[in-house]
Image (cartoon, rainbow, N blue to C red; front, side):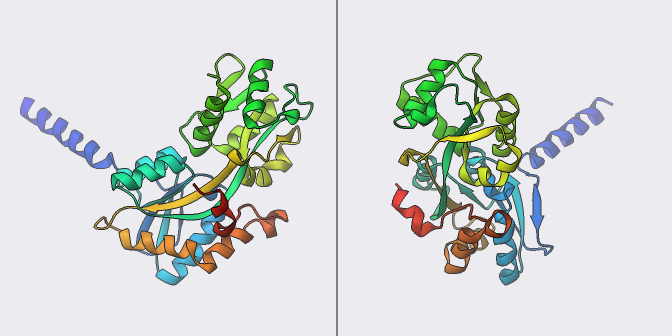
Length: 282
């Protein structure tokens, strides 16, 4: 009996280990047997990834599994080879991934920017701020509600960089960590009357539902948000298809899809192409 129990426990442990690296597709585009996995956040949430995937799949007979994750998590999934590529906006972490050898093919694919949105009456007076660090300083001094994703996403990394520039360690009841994605946190800021740093693409898609908020600060070069794609290294399964997708996204066809995305839905584009973004790429 004990031997049977030990065998059963060993089986469960092995099963758990085998499943540890598996990821769940948030959405799947295509229905072929040739599946590759891509991790990203807002580009998938806002629908642009679906357009890119459908056009790529039509040429390559592939199926894309999109795994919804912020930039930090996306890079972790890539490092573990749980996904084949990612689209992220965390330049320092991306460069380290390439230097460390577990990511290749880093390619600039486009950009958007961050806006600081908040209650229309602007209790912290950030509309008068000289730069983004000043805007954050005003929010902290006023003790006005500020929502942080707090999830190691590219947005969260940028937010922390701004607090560091301002010389402030944010803490207290006014500083609320949501551990949620961009759109969900934007909607919560609207419901609770708080400030939030959202990307411009999410703002375009969600502004009709956040009527109590306004863009109160924008334009600091620090708030430009560049996106790159990275793939698993040579020798990894699906390296070739991952690199082919990156090449497609960087091509004239892929770049046009990125630059045009949103125009038919919202009357304005949601992302800038790589040609525009390169002036802010460091």
